[in-house]
Each structure stands twice: as C-alpha cells, then as structure tokens.
Length: 113
Length: 113
Image 1 (cartoon, helix red, strand yellow):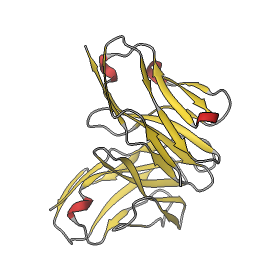
Image 2: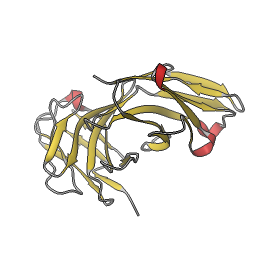
Image 3: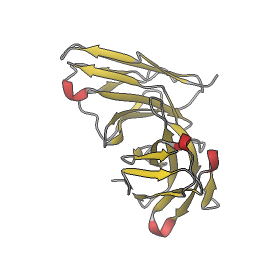
Image 4: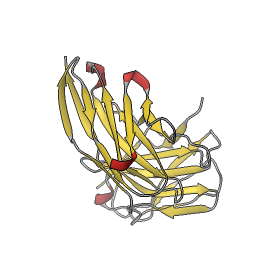
C-alpha cells in the first residue's frame, strides 16, 4: 500500500529564514508527486507538482521541490519565508495506475514577523 | 470559471439522519475524489471515481457511499451518520489521462451530534 510521511508536524520560523519540509513516500510504481498549501480556513491549492523530467521543480511563490527517486523523497524548500507563508502544507502521491491518491498528515508552518 | 462546487458548506445533523453532500465540477474531469480532513491525520481518501459509473474505495470508505451517474457530479452519501464522521470534507477533480493536479472544492464542515 502506498503511504506518505511528512517529517515535521509543526515548524516555526522567523521571516527570511530558509525552509525545508521533508516528504517520503512508499510506492515502487509510477507516481505523480504534489505539494499543496492550505491557508487558514481555505481549501487546498497546488504549490508545485512533479510528473517526470527535471527532478527539481519550481512552483508558485518561490517554492521549489526536489524529487530524489533513490530516496523516495520529495522535499519542499523555500530560501526565504514570509509571514504570508503561514499555512498547512501537504505532500501527496497519486498512483497513476490505480488512481489512488494519498496525502501526508500535513505540516503546519508558522512564520513569525 | 473553472471550479469544483460543494454544497452545503456547513451542516449540522443528528445521528442516523441520512444526508448527501453534493460535488460538481465544470472542467470535464474524468477523475473525482472525496477526502475527509481531521486534525493530525491530514487528508484521507474516502472514495474515488476514474470515470462515469466507475467508483473505488479509498482508505476510509466505511459509512459512506458515492455514485457517479454523470461526469460532472460526484455526491457523497452518509446513510446513517455517526459522530465519528464529524469532519471537514473535500471533493476534488482532475483529468485522468493527462498529468494535472487536483482541483479542490471549498470544503464542507459536517457536525454529527
């Protein structure tokens, strides 16, 4: 069965600090990988996605993620966070064969001004 | 405007009283899915559908039913709701064969008393 593990449940940073959120998944087949963001009281929105090709993908708002196949990882990074990045972040795996999607438990990011 | 519409946004009901949460998308997506979001547990997939008349169980299908009679609609049915189904529910849709991300509805906050 596929699963997604996010390493940090709650991260607190000061503005301008660098961010890295860990995500590991377990599934040996073809997957699509995503990071979604959920701002307080809102629905999930896509930050970035990986389907194939360059393992370093860039998303909106200065976020990027690197797919490392050998480590089954898809870590999210941002060089300098802003107060407006305060939100919950979800890593997700979509199994293209079975059609099943699995989300991580989420990481709550709090950025202090 | 491309969107996924859920109704109602908020619902308080009593144990055992059947209810339906509707989900409709206007993007001609083949794939639709229901999730529940609970604190500390992330999003868990309830049911998904890869096309009309095709539905499959996700990770937490017990106590729920779905149907996919039309491409645009994917209602979630709780035949006999119980308090442990109190949660925030999201519907999502995406293309099946093209690599795209999921588009999420605004969410339905359900309370079963």
